[in-house]
Every structure is written in structure tokens, then in C-alpha cells.
Image 1 (cartoon, chains in turn brown, purple, blue, green):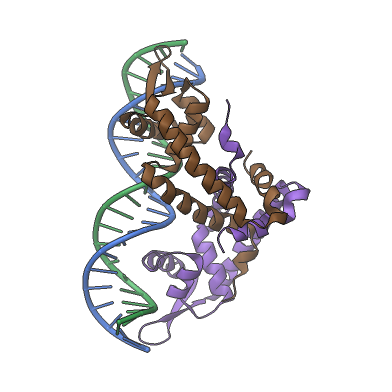
Image 2 (tube, rainbow over the protein chains, first blue to last red):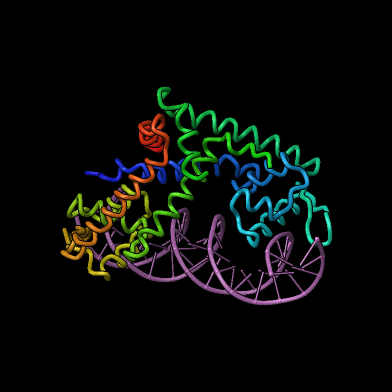
Length: 136
Length: 136
DNA sequence: TATTGTTATACTCTATAACTATA
DNA sequence: TATAGTTATAGAGTATAACAATA
């Protein structure tokens, strides 16, 4: 079949994203983590005390949609919500959260390593900087 | 805020995809086209007589989900379903479909051009081949 | 007055299962 | 027996509007 779509970077970006995110999702599933859960866990680990609002802005998730995400992490015993003032809460990892974070990072590091290995060596180092210019 | 996610190609792939697809979606909206509609229209135009099943396999959309998509295109007068045998239908563009296709391709070509322009010249030619290896 | 956290809700996209009819 | 087209449905993910309480 003739496929003009293959010459479109945007189309290939979408297909590559779909394929890679499906793969990552299936690797995180045994840890009972979604991709957004993993992103949040990593950022809370790197920024203890961050608020839900600031975290949502960083990973581009609406405030309203942060609520079920953080509820999930809290109910799993991975984070606590510590009041900062009467309005804000600082998010912190629990001991279980730090252990889960280590497991998540191990999965993601392996995933990212294999992702880059799929890219031919002559293109490999260009991928990350190219992608970063498309949204930052 | 410290953000370890920025060093992950997979994460940047997702963010780049979200940003670019949101942009493309907003450019296709005035044409009353979704991205999958546009992909289907392009492939039907390039492969007259293709079946719904073959088209779905090519653009990775389940058979079941092709139905509302093709209904949309047919009700908009853009395609016809021409029986091949008692089981299959060949998809064809109508005159309106060919006109819509031209408009869609114009929008996408401009979008793709601007996408590539955002990528620094030293990385630009590496993007498409790198992305293609991630799903083909 | 702007921001935080929250609730409720709707919409899109996608996945799955099942069915009929035909190759 | 495998495939094409279809229907119905359920689950994610996300977007929007509104609210109370606080900075």
C-alpha cells in the first residue's frame, strides 16, 4: 500500500509515541503504576514539598485531574500530603514511596536505554534535543 | 524545580507528541477534520479501493473503530463505500473528498514545515529516521 | 483578586467482545 | 476456518465549570 504518511515527521512522531507509550505502560503495569503516576512520583522524589498545583503545571496535568492521581498515590501509601499553610499541601514520599520510586526508575531507565538502542547510532544523539525543541 | 524527566527521551517524546498533536488538531478543526480522519482521507486518496480493514491495519485503528470514522467521512460526502464482493467494500474519494484532501494536505504540509523549522538545523534531518525506527 | 484543592461532569479516543455474513 | 463489517460497551485520559477556603 502506498503510504504518504510515512514522510510526515508529525505522523511518525504520533506513531512512535503510541508504540513507545504502549510499551512503557505494559512495563509499568506490574508495578501498578501509570505513566502519569510515575512522572509524579519522580518529581515528588526530586522536589520534596512540592504542591499539587506546581506539580500539575510541571507535568501539564490540570489541577482537577491531579486529585484522583494523588489520591491513588496516597491510598497506595506512596505519598503524604503535608499542610504548608491553610491552603497548600506539600507532597512528600513515604518510605514505601521511595522504594517504589527506585523500582519505577529501574524500569524506566531500562526502557529508555532500549528505546535509544533502537535508534541507529548516527541519529541517536539527535533525538532528545530535537524532541525538546518541540515543546519547550 | 528540579526535573529529571527532561533527560528521558521517552518522556520528551510524549510531551513533544502532545504539544504537536494539539497544534495539528487545532489547525484541522476549521476543516472539521480529526487527525485520524485526515490520515484516512490521505490513504484512501493514495490507495483508491482500499478496504476498511486494510486501512485500519495500516493506520493502526481497530476494525470496530473504523466504523464511526468512515461513517463520518461518508456522511460528510467525502467518500463512498463501493462493494467489492459480498463481504468487502472498496473506499473511494468523491469529488468533494478530493477537494477536502487538497485542503487537508495544505494544512498538514504547512504544519510539518513549521514543525521541522522548530528543530535546530543540526538535528533536523535526524528526526524522521529516528522516529521511524521506533515503530516500524 | 488570584490561587489551592476539590467535586462533578462531559467528551474523545481506544479496547474488547460478540454477532452476522461471506471468502 | 478465517476474514469483513458492524454493534454495543467499557475504560482511560483529558477538559471544563463551579465551589469553598485561603493567600
